Image 1 (cartoon, rainbow, N blue to C red):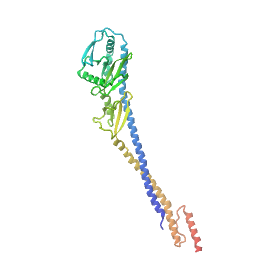
Image 2 (cartoon, one colour):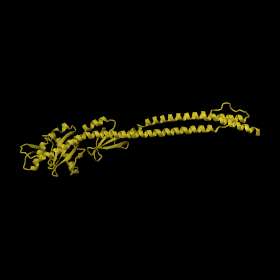
Image 3 (cartoon, rainbow, N blue to C red):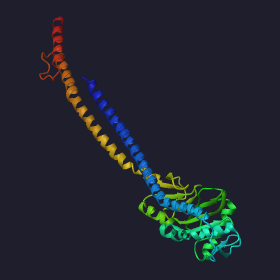
Image 4 (cartoon, rainbow, N blue to C red):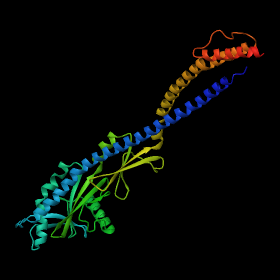
Length: 356
């Protein structure tokens, strides 16, 4: 006699196997997406930490430059003194250096020049106090510049004049009363410019030249496994942690963090392949784990079903066949829990005999 329960048993096993594969894939995919999300959050936290580190290096420079401007405003209020000293200035129009006396009939010019004389200690100790500051300049609205040194080198004068021409032509400075940042000042140098005002009149500006390499090199070395880019306010590249930056970012995941101390941004580039490939190993591990556990559960349920149900149904089938063949007792060993059914079948078989 054909037993349909065996067919359902095999069909249920096949469906259970498919369900195990689907559930394992679904659970492993969730873990994979979670691992990718954790990787992105970890990278984001790393970018935030590096940005804070970079802000902590820029903050002393900005604080020092602000202190110089505040000191200049205080020195301008001091009364002028008679002195026979002079000061070396670079004429931004004629591109020639000239020696101007600190005392003259022009009281405004005298106050401005003597202010520079009083600020000489700030020019001298800038590089010692801040290794990233490689030069301090004062650019007067009168068209002259002061570098705090006894002479102007040709290299310094030429690059300052070139930068001044670019700034004038592009009108980058304008009438901005706050800090102005320049990504390109001299080769390998950026600059921060702070205007000096007195009685709502602009006298000039203090320019602080910054060498970015001492500031960025430790950070790049500490995080050598990730590509960082320093971008200006227009999104142009200022510095890159690798010698050959990628030409396109289509194959990279780009995250950008704005700096708090200046209008520049720090960008992090991470290859998409490494980001998604990092979770493949976890995906396979979780898939195998879930498949093994669910497979063991399926085997246990099938074993129990086979022992408790299929075996009993098989015994019942044999019992019915023996009764149909005229045997009076059928099977001897009745499965546990099935005794009532077997007895009821025997009673029905005995009731049918007289009618026959």
